[in-house]
Image (tube, rainbow over all chains, first blue to last red; front, top):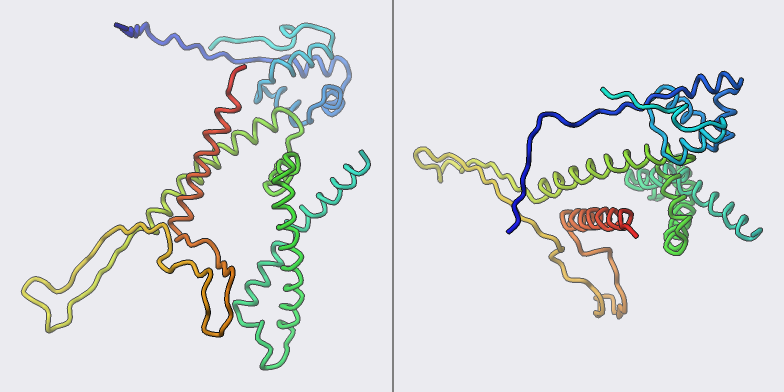
Length: 82
Length: 206
């Protein structure tokens, strides 16, 4: 016999907000949004959305961005727990 | 490779014709409905316009028929046609995600609209008053509300038969023998079935 137990321990769901320092990295290198977009193979609108934290890039794109700036993902993207 | 590029360019042109000639085809249908196909009273500028639009509908129909068969054998062309028709550009992952969300919302909206339309096409409401002679105390009229869901037209398919004009018809195809509700339910099943199948296919692991 299978018994399914559901334990309620309050609200355990954490809202993770991905933050980014992409705009900082880009301006430090003197790149325009279009130049960065062309370099990593996305549209300028996507760069704008990532910089405004309206869009979370896929892991693949995050790695591409990090590789372009010769750094690791955590330097550009980090998590804030709300 | 060169031949494929040339074919792609031809397909682009045909897709453009399908999109931009569609209003012309609609204009031809509207002018036909308004009676400008009848030249018995002489020709006006609207009759000439109908002639021009008539050629437009011929070109548009030819392009649509070509695309219909071409997309059946060319998956890339099918995706391209759908993207062009819907004005979708998928240049990167974010635009692909936007398209996915928009498609899901469109699917839900269209499905809801179809359910409503099936309901409305099956609904019968009759309100009437009895003539004076049939009225009894307290009964002056009636309200009838019912549902009748017919999927197939009543009239039989006219196929092989000898017509009154003496012609022996081998094939006399006059469209699908489905009612409006039948057509809606068919599209509903295709839409739900297609969404379920492709969702399963995309989410399959391994």
